[in-house]
Image (cartoon, rainbow, N blue to C red):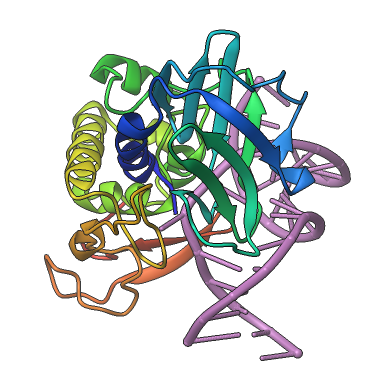
Length: 256
DNA sequence: CTTAATGTTCCCCA
DNA sequence: TTGGGGAACATTAA
């Protein structure tokens, strides 16, 4: 469920409910949810800040930071009824934050090292983006999914941005010229910002921390639209597999 | 029964 | 070092 716009939306709904709250109890019900060293005692610690870093949600305490990654099916919700997919709970003074995750690809980690993450696509400059593409032979779609290249882009927004920029997903990243690279970055920015404004994409069961669905799925031009007509030229949208992920594209609008 | 799903990491091989 | 392919992790739905 979570790419940059979904995580940003979740963080925005968490901020008013978590900031300055004291932890009364914390429990990790599924052992695999916690990666790395267990966090120190969180009881009586106060959440000072809630931030997004790529696809990570960061809860800052005075003595360190809890990083939460939602994986594919993770959700953060308040005061939900008992549920078999509950993986962790953080009890606060006025509510309980619950981490539910069907597939258990999500993780929580204390003071996670995020140095290896690439720049945020909403902040990276054009020249830096172009410099990072230089010399790379990987298909651009594969590179966009690599969090050490850019942090926050996932399968939906990679496909949508490549369509908007008119770039074939299999194009070797380093062969994208200056103009097309600028167009790709601009498409990413515009699409991510627009998706944030609409609360992200709810294609199956994604909801923010208030339980609200996003609406950006209505703007998807190619993602999940195999065999449907291209909104620009009517040619059927095609799907291919790159890095074991589906890539949706228009064979006429997106050339090498 | 098979396939695919908003993700990441690790291993093998060229 | 780069990059391609595949497996693994775990669960559900079509």
